[in-house]
Image (cartoon, rainbow, N blue to C red; front, side, top):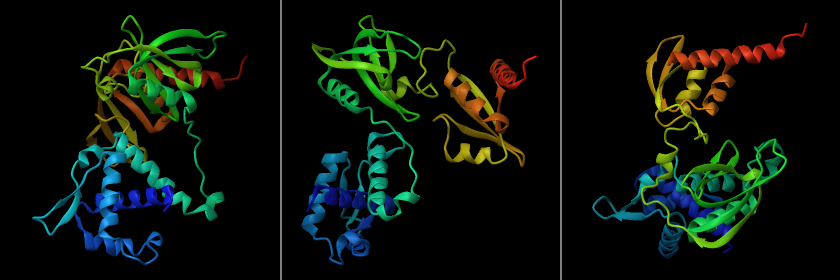
Length: 303
């Protein structure tokens, strides 16, 4: 069997168990024989066990059996599939890939967004992270005529708004964000580094809206009022992990956030136009108000 075919089976099995919560081997086989992959043939127990081992090796997800509950199978470390985990991202991506690969006849009716892979730079950065090696980076900011050179310890990478970013630590200990699409050249050095044992990537960005970290404003309580159908978008896809609903009427819904009001958050609020507005803090509401006025002036006719 080819590797792509095996991957399809891994993804199918993992999704089947994950969606069921707990499921017996006979129930798995009932679902399996209804798929095109099975050709109507049940999955052998030996094949199932090989798939379990492969899934643990590839995804780090352990499929275990509860002999006290009808020999049902479940994902032992299901908490690793939370919405921000690498495992969840891989599973979601490969699941969609499987669906698309089986729908090539509909390719002109399935429209996708372009998500840059980061190319060779992403691979080199991950290699450097794995081997704890410093990287030499030639980086040119937007609008700059020349590139600046940095030697960095790559601490983590983050995908945000269709772009990959690297969090690098300079020799003086300062952290800085680098967008991979602005890297002119990147290479691995022979020098190694020891990552700070207290560093936690999720915690580091936990108070941020996106990737802006160089902002003097501290994390604080922010209340956003959403109108019409905008409230449902916020409910279904929270803009920040701290978001919670605190009030709701027929006209609007209020959401509370605890985060740093960075410029990328202000930009997002501007994009929501009259569908959402800042209620608290007042200084931020005033700032967004002035930004809207500046935007309106751009469309005013010149005298």
